[in-house]
Picture 1: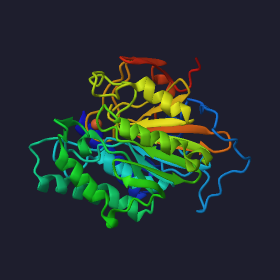
Picture 2: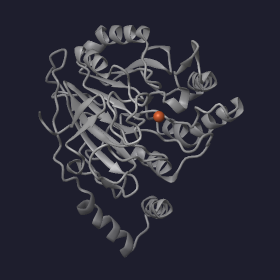
Picture 3: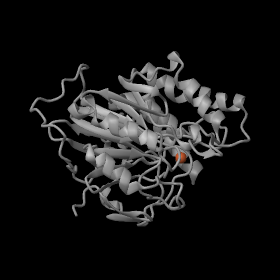
Amino acid sequence: MAIKRRQLLLFGGLVLGGGLGGAAVSGFFKRQPEAIAPTNAPTKTSPESAIANSPESAKPTIKRSASPAPRGLYAPPRGDLRIVVISDLNSAYGSTDYIDQVKQTIKFLPDWEPDLVLCGGDMVAGQSTDLSDVEIKAMWQGFDKHIASPIRKAKLPFGFTIGNHDGSASTYNGKFTFASDRNAAKSYWNDPSHDPNLNFVDRADFPFHYSFQQDQVFYLVWDASSANISSEQLQWVEKSLASEVSQKAKLRIAIGHLPLYAVAKGRESSGNYLNEADRLRELLEKYNVHTYISGHHHAYYPAHKGKLELLHSGVLGDGPRRLLSGDLAPNRTVTVIDIKLVSSETIYTTYDMDTLKVVDLATLPRYIDAPNGRITRRDIKI
Ligand SMILES: [Fe+2]
């Protein structure tokens, strides 16, 4: 099945990329708008901003299309800002290459004309003590070749969070268990030739925890590559979110690899979601963080709990998983977020990257009872 899907995608990619004429192609394109138009109405979720929003809209510095999208895919109207969220790109331990769905998405990225690409982590496939330093470095070279370099060439700013397979923060006897992974990640990301083109606010511990600001949005990245976020780091989180630059931003978004609440089968055990999730959520809520974006669970589920939006990004690489509730087949996804700054409205368009159709929000369970609390689908009011 996986091979069939890949073949289908390859064919689709050829058709889309090659711009071939003829009946088959026009049929393909004709079907798309009907077949993939989302049936879910955009859902507005507007946690109160910490400061009053001014009526002015964002002032894009680059001329943008009204509804940019890769040819043949559903094209949502763009907001004041657009983010494309990708996550969990890797394959087997030590792999230096990526599956076709990942490569296709990277090719598609410029066509969505995003202001920012965000990655929820697991960009490479480490976290194995069997891997040598040479092999770990080779993985990051593969990442650069297939992922980062095309994104740089497209001049797209790239924000990301470190995943457990990139550089796990788990410790043993007070030392990092995967110190080699962390050293390699640090070395790769601090190489000036790998500049992710972000407007950093604080990069003292980049790439593990850092903050940046872009187009009136403040982004806080914490190190959720293991289940525990240290008290020292939480002090930094609080200070960063309370800062003037954060509070004057029109929106705050936090990003980390592990989610606050489990959503996927096989990922519901502790260690696969953050410890003390409610306390962390309350910290984010205190400073009016709009959304927490995570990866790791390999299952797309947009949710809310309390005053916080939760985007559980789907997987693009190996190992899609089933949600804890419902009967949806596992899928690979990428999510386009259009942001309306005046209303703090975020509109998601999530594509199944095996079928290139839009995921219908209504097909997702209305809520998920995670081991550490219930989370509710983002469009369901409670
Ligand atoms: Fe992970």
